[in-house]
Image 1 (cartoon, rainbow, N blue to C red):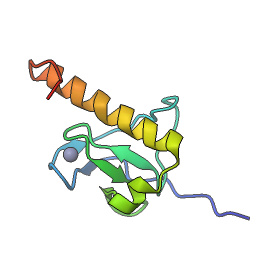
Image 2 (image 1 turned 30 degrees about the vertical axis):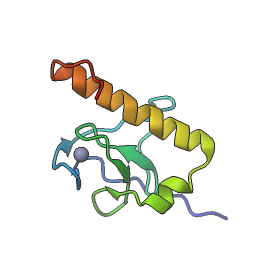
Image 3 (image 1 turned 90 degrees about the vertical axis):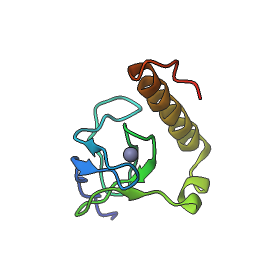
Image 4 (image 1 turned 180 degrees about the vertical axis):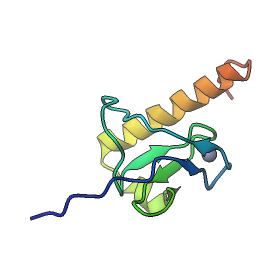
Length: 97
Ligand SMILES: [Zn+2]
């Protein structure tokens, strides 16, 4: 039997940019609370993060990102691009570098 992963801490300060993130939306269907080990993206800087149960999310390592299955890697890339586009639009830009 596989132990169920614990719910992750939702509100946190991004370890990369310091933005307070207070909620999470599941990228696939929006109806899921993050659990320990899930991958997330900071809405402030688009950093890839790993949720933890008893601590704020930490930065994902390069090995963890390289180890993602293709579907998860594609979803991560699309999510990072979406955050960058939204942030750019909110700041008055096109969202493009
Ligand atoms: Zn951040």
